[in-house]
Amino acid sequence: MLRNFPFLALGTALSVFSAAPALSAPPGPAGLAGLWTFEVTAGAGVTRGAMTLAADGANVRGTLMTDQGADALPVRSVTLAGRDMAMRVESPNGDVTFRGRLDAAGRSFSGTVTYHDGRRFPMAGRQQ
Image (cartoon, rainbow, N blue to C red; front, side, top):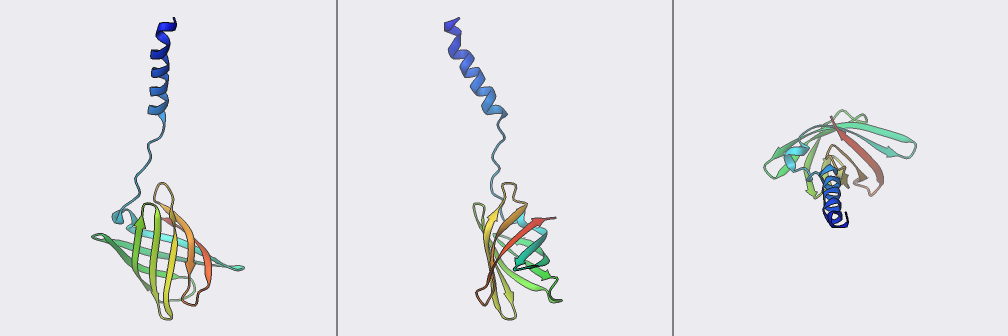
């Protein structure tokens, strides 16, 4: 009986590892393409918006609109380093930037948006 123990332990270990979920790779630019909705929590208020992103080779660009204005703002860049995400949006008053992180599935993000005047607020979004 003791002679079979190493094989039993190996078989149990293999079945545990094979049942573990596979880790997904971070999405590339094409994985960010599509419609995203988001919220920015600024004090007692919440600004809601949507952005449409498109992959352009290794770059991601698009447009963004909020419920605070009628103008579409150009998303000049979205970059990924693993799941770390950075975005630059051009506004009439200056650039607005975001730094945050994608979830493991690459379908939602959260982080901090910094307005052109230096104010910083939590921002979270989800791909539709």
